[in-house]
Image (cartoon, rainbow, N blue to C red; front, side, top):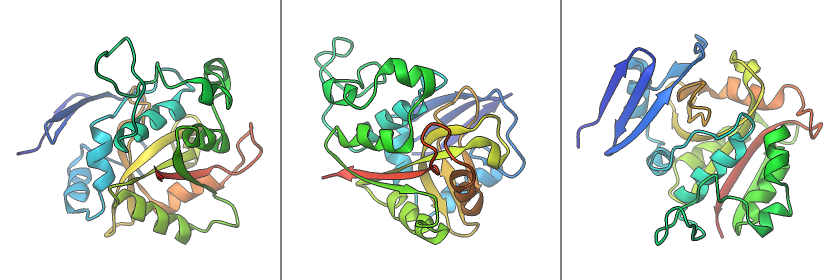
Length: 241
């Protein structure tokens, strides 16, 4: 199947593998980042040997439903991509899939509540507990002196190259030149020729998917502390048990 990318102003439609994702980005993308829809961004994607996560995540690519709902949107994409059995809901009955509306069940409410998420989001460790509550195998790494950039690169490349793992990152936007700070999103691909990862930003109203260098990505997790946890941000690698 041919793959087309159509562009009109800043309204971007990605038509890949027969799946359409609509993005409207309202912030200027910093010059150090490469948008997926650009000529270079497309070249990096098609030449990448590490993009298994993209094909699975793109089927379930969603935008977060609230300004502090990025972790839940990322989790929903990951759960669907990993083919975790979702709950039955009135919305799609007799069919089912994970959505941000039905993410919270009894087990997840023991970790946090929708009201708390809307008010202040979640920390890296809280999000790991939310994912674990769905029976997933979860590996959490804070980007501090215990987790080097080399370790991050190795684990992230392995995850985006895999058919049974997803990596979510918790980073600070301002470190990479974007507006804002604490945010969650999944990584979808890696290009070894330029040492950059493809970030599928779940705040699709704000920023499009971008390629970002491993060094800057690691710095966005390691520089500064999360004000809620007083710990470094980091990443989560998840898979089915």
